[in-house]
Image: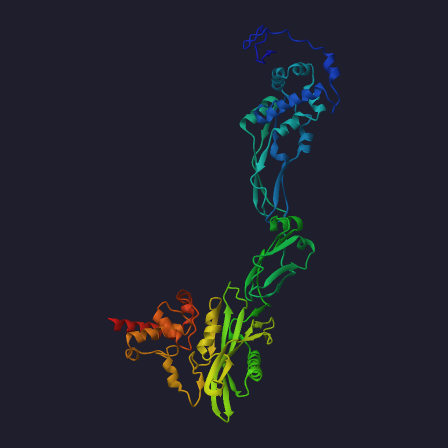
Length: 585
């Protein structure tokens, strides 16, 4: 019996609660007919549902080791007889499940299993926990019948009290081994025997996977096309699949790189599903298929590209460019020169090829500067003035963004060109009257050095370059040849070492000069490229030279000197410095 005030269990016949001290009220007598009238039919409501709920508490206790049902005569049940392991799915992703045959178990034991006396006694001792409900249950003579009215039988309760698990349930292939292990404790077995009069037998059940279907291998890249567009190195790629049937309609493709592409680049395409599922699992589960690969590489081709060297320009295109240059020079002579000046000849010397440095955004991807040596004749034939001389100078014509097309042909816009806007003046010294002399402006440069500094050196911060000028031409040629002017030897007197850019000097040759002369000779190498000087005497010296054009500060030149100086110039500079220092000691 239990205290109605605090719920403490008390010995039968107690008059006061040993816990709270409250007097024990006499138990309420419940009329037999009242509960019977209150029992609804199956599916009804009221107190009977509460009874079943209370009994369910005891049923759950069975599964936890406090179960309490079965028939009075002990029997042995082989649980393995009712457990079946089944397999489904496809090779490599097969699934296993263990199913207890409840229908067969019920058919075999529904009418055989009864609650034992111990079970009914356990129920009687527990009904006090249900208060008034417990008294109501006590008036039901057939507990099994009441439970059966709500779908519970001793057999089903036993079934609910046993369980187990498979060691593997997924990722299976035919021939794999799986094991079902029962999860029944020793206490469970004792309770089954005590309350249900049943002994259970069982053992691990070993199974071999079989019956899984073999998936079909398919190429997920069938029908995939990659389209390239644009001009290298800024080409783009787009991937698509024209095959949308079946599994292909649910595949998604991604490229690891789809911009800033050049011919020959290798890009990787990856296939996934639109839904983010594991690709192999999705294809197997939904289509019984396995992709043969999930990645595929493609090599970029078919892009137009900017040529990276003059050697890539075809002979045909180069000939057209050279002819265009000659036509421009001829047109310039006809349009701008005096009647006393005629074009004698224009000879192609080669080219400077400039390539845009990566990330420089120089404006053009490449520039081809065609260089010409032009000879014009000044012919003054007046009564009181006679003069005739040739003037040699240098002229360039620039073409931009020469391209190689997808079919391998070379293309250039011959109408997109530039020429020099610089002029130099030649004064003949011949009196023309009115206190003046005959003098003429020529479009171009007196020396290759001046031209080189203008179109190459001034752009080395954003371009690399090739010097493709014919062998034998240096950046310090003579300007005017006439009967009245000095010869080549006199022209070279403008330099201490006129050939320091084209040949290696020996120590014996250098030893003839003073330390000061060697200092100038060494810096001549840098001055040809437009280097300025902090040494005021040096700067003044080079400013006095017609061929000198200051372009770079010493700091700017130091950053680019290694890329623009030839090996010959570097070697000469080192040797000159060595001899120069020896003369200072």
